[in-house]
Length: 372
Image (cartoon, rainbow, N blue to C red):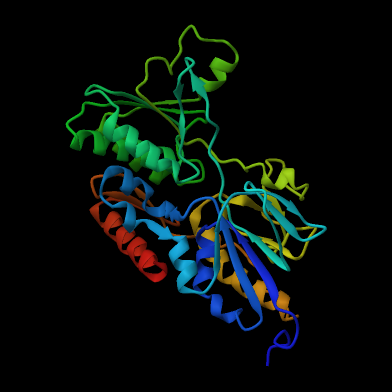
């Protein structure tokens, strides 16, 4: 018999509906004999990042890449609250929402993802659309579908995986709508796809060239504007501006005075616990692992953290030893390069074509079917 069955019921609060929390929600019954679970998230659905560029291109429908958080909660007898948590009171074990509500917890987990850049006004009116949070992709899709002229000018800031995938997806979608897009990518580093192999970069360069997408490296157009160097404004007269450069933490952890890294991400130990508060867990892009501070913000780690997070919340409440999370060194990576093609990287191997996309599509659909 679980030791909590004769004591007061425990309160587990999940803040955010990222990949790790969806796994926990779908395994909620392991806790329910001794705990009540509440999920608090600002949106009723969560887009899956692995299929985001395919959604922009029009390969996938919204329902094919979305997790209905409210429905998952209902199915697994979890309390669902649509709101935004703006402060965590770790000392008194409470969270406060934007709707002036407060909720007590015994164990708290945060899986809110990261943000890309900021809303930056260009010429007093036009906004750059950040690629994260992922629900911004709905705004991007609307802009692409309804508000662009035939000979549209599109700029993507950032040449990482998100920038490459989105630029190719936007071009493919525009071409399907019989537009003639002029797309530019600006990357502040010396080359695209930092952290990827030279062969993967080579294949990706070729895809960009074939698509007629121009690339400028070692250049940050927003930095030039900040320094008032507007004599050659690369962002002027653009029809669509997309920010896909890096990631940053939201304000939640700093506002809550929780330990964070230099970029504001929640600092956690090898058990995915806050380095100061063992009853607070975190997973996915919103955290920084103390022992792996330079770990990339990629979805594979959030997925791998899911069972560890799930086990450790149970273990903490059951006074059992916790599991360590150790990020894998090598993992399969497939970039979606539009038109049902991709670039696959595994260790030193890299190749492009239709087969990588077919593999990625099968993996992504299986993942969605497992949790939807």
